Length: 408
Image 1 (cartoon, rainbow, N blue to C red):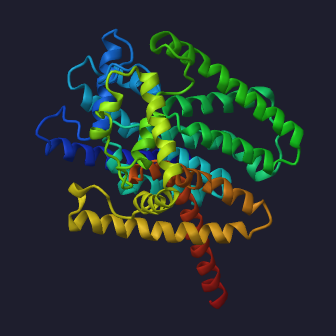
Image 2: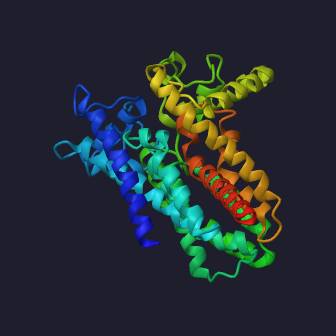
């Protein structure tokens, strides 16, 4: 298994580094950052490294969770720091493929783990985003790690872990939230599913209570810091309002464009807490005034979220579209068939395992029925869909092999 993990790691790293180096070689500048969120993360990381604290382009202090900008801050003060930061992403993305090998081996078999790891290693969208300074690569790495801390309880129907095991789950859950605040609901949903799967309800509820306590305690320093620097106790960030408005406001079309939104006259001069409240109130007003439009937008967002082709106009060449479709459509098909077949297996709790692996896709689809839809937001769900696809591939291969043996 160790040799397999190394091989998958090297494959994933070679693909990510190869793509990243090709992009850098064709970029006008080594320090080029293509997307606005990348530029914002780098600006906040630079501010942190210079001793000015976490600040965005407006001077706001609590618009992003601190873990990812904190990591980037180590690279902002060194030559070619952006290149080194991208190298870190390549390594983290390759490590995620290895974690999938481990998870697949524990849930199904070493063969399924290997196939799933190779699928994650070769996923063109995961490869593409590994060279962008965004939270996606780090987040799905941590999310897979969270799944590894929980797998035994879902597959065995038993929750008999000691208190320190629950502390570990709580610690990884806290890391998820500190990377991306929207993962809080996903973490809670996964914990509730552990309670549903467990035969010992009270023991599982006690364990989940420990996890939630760890999560709350871990967020207290961040919330207190926000109270000190932003003037208001804030457990997560002040970004929810503008993000929701971007998805449901009168200008919303399913895609995201904060350029004009964040410069609206109505919010000029507001502090960040008031800024967040204004956008949140305006978002709810928009949803109440025309709920039918919100439902129609949800369909547009889902199409963008699960689009097998890139949404960005600059990535619409025939080659890119072909690679994207040839890869993504079979993965979707295999994952859907695999989920259906696995859910019908009674021995080993196939339905519990199926739902557990689909929770990220279900949660992300729900969240982005309101927030903007983009291919990048589905990435954390893809390793788990690729696990289902890998299980289906191996199952088909084994059945074909048995049929050949029966005929010979």
